[in-house]
Amino acid sequence: MQNPQQVYQQQAIMNASPLQLVVKLYDLLLQATYRKDQKRVREVLDTLTESLNFDHEPAEELFQLYQYCQDLAREENFEEIREVLEPLRDAWEQAAKGKTEEQAAS
Image 1 (cartoon, one colour):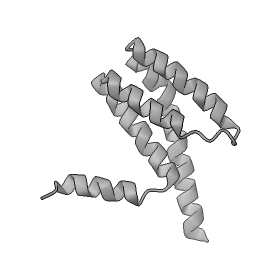
Image 2 (cartoon, rainbow, N blue to C red; image 1 turned 180 degrees about the vertical axis):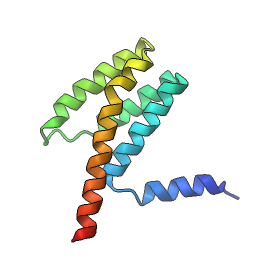
Image 3 (cartoon, helix red, strand yellow; image 1 turned 60 degrees about the vertical axis):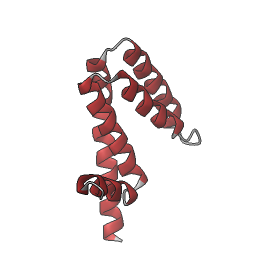
Image 4 (cartoon, rainbow, N blue to C red; image 1 turned 90 degrees about the vertical axis):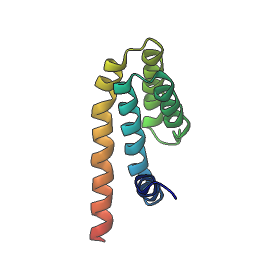
């Protein structure tokens, strides 16, 4: 029998919008920095990097930012990773909320 929390998390991911998934990745990344889990930090950064769509303007800047955070992870500078990415995570969350409210209004 599956763990109810695991089932809930799987459902949340399956029902999430692309923007909400980005927020969830940032949450995983930030949690890993608090645990000082270098491997997990680097894996999530790789996932974020691989998901970039270079047809859109901010992709190159995000790519460079994720590379910088990879360097910080190698140095185990988890606090600076949080300082860099927490505001960005909050911005993604605001964008996701705005998109959800926009869809609900239409």
